Length: 135
Image 1 (cartoon, rainbow, N blue to C red):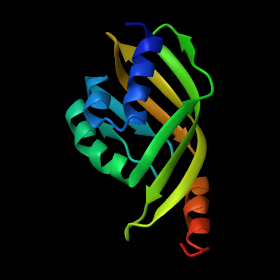
Image 2: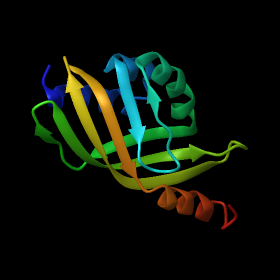
Image 3: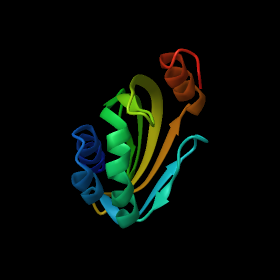
Image 4: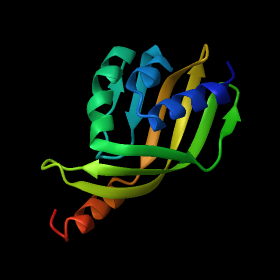
């Protein structure tokens, strides 16, 4: 499997809301890293899979639309637009649309490392505005 195919397989699984398929697309020692203060990382396929169900439930209709896929050997960069309906603590859904970029490292056809760069303050602004300005 090529780097592009491995990355697309992973993104397709997330876009389908398929936690098992997303976990199957990553290595056993997968590193999921976030640069935003609002994001949290995790290490290992098992720990990642354990968090995916809750993540996908809170980010309903999650969709990453790649703007480009830039590949250099086993590395890829994917600028994206992410859209979803974020669910707050009382079950209210709020629309979110953010641009960001993934940086991937692929090994043996699986995503081994993912770094996600996105603007946590823009996320906060969107969910606060949807709440009528109350954070």
